[in-house]
Length: 426
Ligand SMILES: *[C@@H]1O[C@H](CO)[C@@H](O)[C@H](O)[C@H]1NC(C)=O
Ligand SMILES: *[C@@H]1O[C@H](CO)[C@@H](O)[C@H](O)[C@H]1NC(C)=O
Image (cartoon, rainbow, N blue to C red; front, side):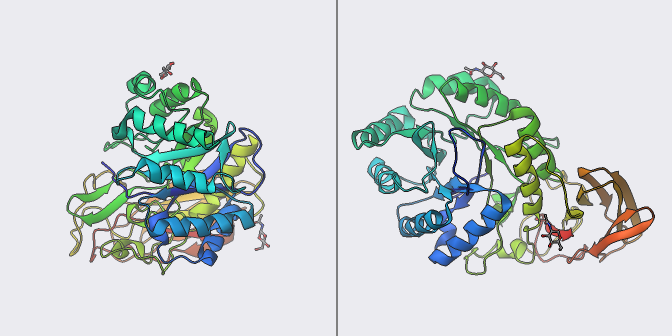
């Protein structure tokens, strides 16, 4: 189980959203905004907009009606100023009163920054199936009595088995759409399929939708003995986007996440003002993921326009863990599923014209022929200890661009760390 403390805000793209245009938002942990000023929100929103996002929403994960209520108010002001979208994702792993949910939605329902779908204020969750249909139906009725129509698309995470899609509909007459939270393999050494997406997309569409598909780059957590796991994520950030664009074609893509640092799936910058707790800094600090946004930008454009965008500047985004998976570390907890990831450096090219991507680390060499647009390859970790990868774009025998990673791959480690360093040659 991947438990997450959530109050989510979704950040959506900056253009005016026409009815049911393809929307991309990112799950934002509002509880990580404890120290945020309005300027922090503006920085995050501008970064998200530059990546092509429309908003933070079920991505505005709000865990409790505490300080988060004030931070969310700042977020709405910042989003209004930036022509950005937000929506609520109520984190039902925490205790919520119906009246608090109604009040928060009503307070911001008329904001131009509120994300709507099918003419209703989009409301989502993390969990909440245990509250039962009557709980959600009463919230809808209370808001309707205030003149506020909602479009309810929760992430009821216990509905993961494709065969339960009809049960979801019969259990919850109150839902309009569905957010499938699951964007990682289910504790197996195999790639994620789209079976769950297709089943719940079809169910959501029978209610008018939206179907919200989660797309995530990674999953690793190591904060205590019970919360120590990694899911096979080596190439997820590439193939999951292609599943969305070519196979599932969801109404909304939700990137999981913008800023859940402890689960290693953040694509936002590491903000030194955010309190990461005692454990997560051991595997988050020094492991930026910003370059993953370059890949997001490419695939978001493709998802929204239906065509892979032309690449102007040759780029290689690469990522790798700092330690071979079998080593023992002096701190943290050996994660479940530690044997699934490959001991390798992964590299994804975005090219204007074909080239060879050369990958070296220690005495190990690999290369792949990359065409126009996106391609992916890898090089295995070397036998030598304490090595750093060297990446080159080679065209007509000439090195066009090259560079090194900033983190050494070492046998010695002070914390079990399966969170990758993400770098870029551009
Ligand atoms: C459940 O999913 C399947 C596809 O996997 C689809 O054929 C079926 O119509 C779905 N059921 C409902 C109730 O939407
Ligand atoms: C390409 O690189 C140039 C020089 O670094 C930069 O000015 C330009 O904005 C880049 N173009 C894109 C589309 O990123």
